Image (tube, rainbow, N blue to C red; front, top):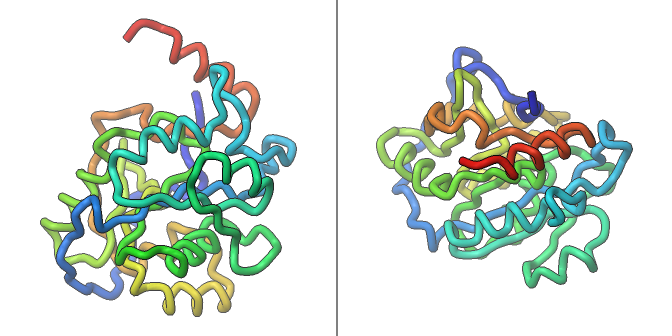
Length: 223
């Protein structure tokens, strides 16, 4: 079975944090951010966003799925900027060298975005739902929370998150204090949860060559 994203946490482990009601954004008020800045140590250090699935780099799968859902796009990468730039999307690096994880990419995106909201997704989730943004927006609109993330099959997938850029200062301070886990950080703001339990494979990610082969075979099967 293709793995879930590192950092997925049970909803019961979400901690109570600051609640800051905001008006939910429209899609045009959101910058989609593809996080492709990791080491991919479990795949031998390859640039995972450029690894191919069914003849196409993973970054293309995610870009094509995310672009119609948001008003702008950014790619967070720490290698091969010139290749990512060919997709016509601004490419941003982590604020500091050292591959400090998805939170560092989120911070760079908050600083670069020209919208008040970002929607972050990993580069290794090629089955991105076409209604990801709309469901996150709906979850936020029906809550008193300041952010929103995905739940599926009883697990939280915190890298898929709708976050206000006004949290930039808080995130910067938390990174300096040593916070590295996305689930730990976002749980402090007790996010609204968008339930995708009807999409059991939508958040499968790729961590090995075996995952690539398995998912490619799955994509070739009739629906």
